[in-house]
Image (cartoon, rainbow, N blue to C red; front, side):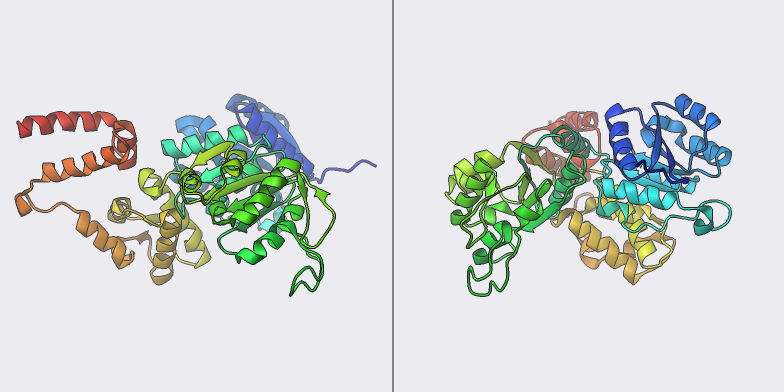
Length: 458
């Protein structure tokens, strides 16, 4: 029996990367959408002249510097089509500007299957459910910042490229990074970009579960296997069959359980606690830690053989302080999210407040930034988020880092600037390009300043 495609599920995908276009098309067609592909603007215009589309998925990079005029023209010429822009290395502010120019919603690459389906389902609703005239502003059930990786820095571009490169594999992936850098988000993106995207993604935090219950949580147990086991329980490995099992803070796992995890990786079978039988499962393992796994191995806390089994496809996430102006993109996205959630009127962040956010060290990384923006939105309102609305510890930190007047404490302004830049270079093991990226300046600026400092010190 054939399944008819719903009348209002006709989508045009405008994407110049064939692999991405194919992924979008596969996800959408499995959910009942009818899709056409265009690799450039000319191809898209030809489709729009010959067919009627309920939604257009448009790669923002493909439009180049004329993205606003393209969106305005397509919106005017195709009022029945909801335009969803997809941004990669473009600033999140460009995506927001696109929405203001008439786009219905925006997504940021890599786009999860669930996010894509939810957005297109809402965009293709009948006009009667969207309100008269132009499509209503989107009522996003899951804000973009919660299920995508945002940032146009070199570090984030490298991370996205790594995710796309390893997603199709079934080999274990090992994500490292400080707390709050988005390790679970990275694992979710790998899963969403993989052939397993339609299967479960199960996450376990090895540091949040008592050690004596961890084996049961992973492999399950039978009724009566231990005190408190009042019924059979399926473990995370069985629940993830066909999909992905994410083990966060893997270095917290007890050595005795590390042996059982190693056996599972070798055989592909699980044995619930109290059961004499094993079961074959097909899962991909992604694990993460905020520690140095090599140091844990050296100090005997983590098995070397398990480390080599898991550390096949490594991804290291940069701390927020090394991602330059990604801070402002993330902050703007969080502001947009929480302003809508808390019914506030914020539409932008003031220039002085942006400088304050950029000057802060962010020891808690993205999670801390998210909390700071949320707190500021809840406690204040206005068109722009200003410096005085930020928490005191953020503002005071900038004050402590700001430059004193010339001659204060025996140091001049250029000397203080030199110390800050040289400290950044030292922190990146002498790499001037990496230090420049973290500081939001060009490498040539650092080279030029170094020549000036040498002349002044002579």
